[in-house]
View 1 (cartoon, rainbow, N blue to C red):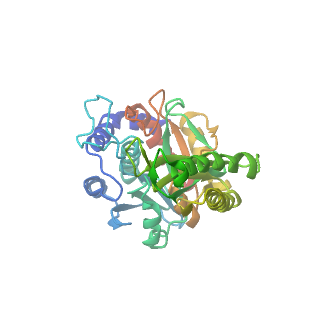
View 2 (cartoon, one colour):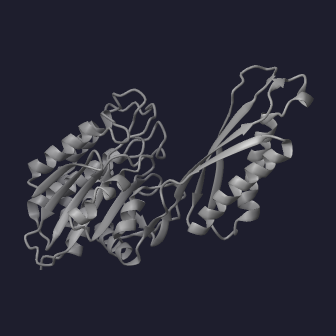
View 3 (cartoon, rainbow, N blue to C red):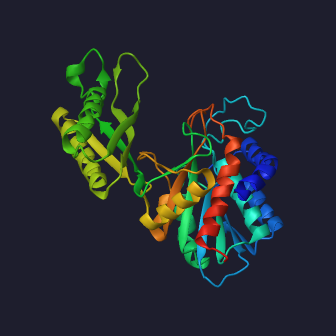
Length: 387
């Protein structure tokens, strides 16, 4: 396919962009350097419109085809932010920012969409408009929600929107997708337990918060095993157990538990919230302790629409000759907010045999760039054929 050959030629240039982003990671909405480079390059490519500051530090570029009679407007989205992780790759382009690294491949996502934007701005071989979206704060900040709240969809007339993420463990450059619920809703909870502190040699005079909290951790495991429909997906994980005491002989007055809930349906989400609160209250009451539960709903379930999923799969097959069925993913993805506003789909591209995302040894595989860029271009040209 000619597009793949073109991007093979562009690979050193696009990989250099990617490695520069990797060396200078930025967190959440603090993507000023990255966003500035993206905006400058989009203007250099000749985009018809470049707007900064959407969703605080997001960037949007508009590319109109040779023809625009179809009236179709397709959005293509990449994320820009990094993670608060100390890098352990040892690569020449490793992070220059202590405690920050591109451990999820957003540097690659940004570079691939920039490469596609450059090609589309040069060729304009489509009938309609491509809107390239560069989003901050995917890693917990809800940047996709912020861009939508800024009116991005209506402002640029976006009718359908697509996202892509690299996937370690899948063959490099091969694609996978699924219709319907794909990535999970991501909620958080914090449970503050208050008892009666005192000397560890006199437990009968105390209300031992460590014991209460330990019972809570175990009891919450039954929400999945005994409350939830076993055919439905639900994860309840306690990830932090913090006491106020560091002494060997002190029963602490307070203990705090923190954790996450992952679901793929509104019913399971509601069940988990209700049961966590009920279990916490009743276990604490049985020991004479007090408890406060703070349950915070995060990203919604990311749902691919059926028709647009097939459009994305068709473009993937044109590029690589295949498109596998992706598994359900209990991780979260704030592209979900964009899919709540417009029909669209999210696809995975294999990153090869690399460390997993969010690992200190992870690095985006630059060999994937031609396939990723080609997918974006193929999708735009298939959805808005010029002939």
